[in-house]
Image (cartoon, rainbow, N blue to C red; front, top):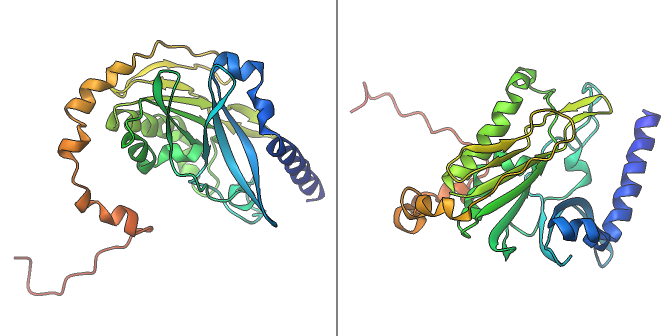
Length: 263
């Protein structure tokens, strides 16, 4: 327990140092390669300090052109001794307050999300409604799910399912980048992928070691889908989707009174 506490304090100090000076990330490497960079952000507002799981988009001049703060925080807020590792994102971060943004930069409409955001269809649809052409997402996902170990064998399948479905249903490229391998005894999945607007994986990492995954991304590939199957302006019916934003948790329908059978 004492070692766990020391580790948490070291992580907090490292996070705070980076959060105080995120502009250091604008340096040569990020500028040369036009990077999406994730970091722990501190936002000091008067006497109150806010902490977010944040990503920034850096263009080829080193300028920060976009910022996103993670919205779908997984895990738990208090230490749970029965777990083989802790997942305390709800303890250390607040829910992001910037929404899902899309930025016109580097010749494309680019959106961002982080890790668990990729599992939620709402993420992609909000970006899709801003005519996103490429979604960049970094993830750090344990293979083992302590509350539901029966899910473990499906980790890679679920990872691909959500990203490929999000790409297809919104006619956008999705670039998913994994921080994988074993860290502190916890195995994280890989499968870094570049996914086309038709939902197909065009390039993918094959191991849990360091790899460079490259693909030529034709931004016009999504145009035919946006003009036909997923022509939002023509086919969406928002008045029937109100429950999505008005209700947070699932509520089962009330059982109908027994009137001798359905009519």
